[in-house]
Image 1: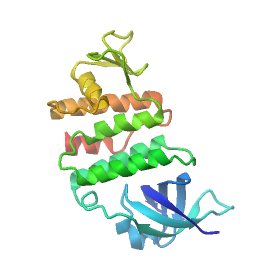
Image 2: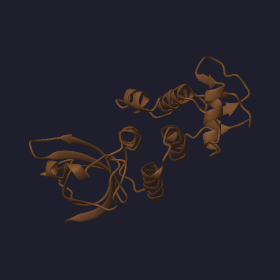
Image 3: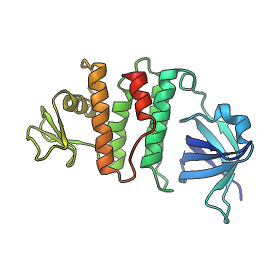
Image 4: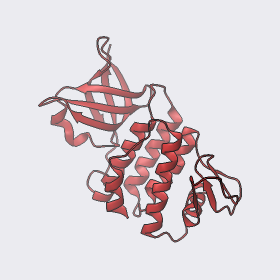
Length: 230
């Protein structure tokens, strides 16, 4: 039986001369992988974070479903064509691929991702976007850092707390990186942030995800986004 679902594209890899294997995060069925025969002919519409309505059916003999159609729902005007925004899109898609592993339906998360994609497409200044995204996304993963002291200078990466208490050991951030994390949690980014500070803060958040998400390891897109943004 054919099914339809709303889907955000996370990854595609070549399967044959004409076909692709595609990973989607779907509204009704969570993470799903599909074989898309003839998909290379429509590769221009299959860009990371593109939002589509897909028609598919499951195959009992395979872990891969089979997509028969993928129709773009909303045209993204800048993400596929702007080199900076497309780099961010690839980065976010890789982050989502590593963090979202289940087939459970999470409508609030899907809506959050849709809104973030539209925001990325429309925003004029995206230099802090990856940092703000990781912090906002961490709330849905249940690992958003908790502000213990409003002016805390130490970010304890193991406990996920921001306070004025210096943690034991060396797995913590201190100073301006903690300040930028704290301001992003509070949705107050009206502070000066240099390329160096943004780069350091992104590294801290990647380390934080690695500590709390078991499957979150090396990101292939991290060096690229550092080069393009910072």
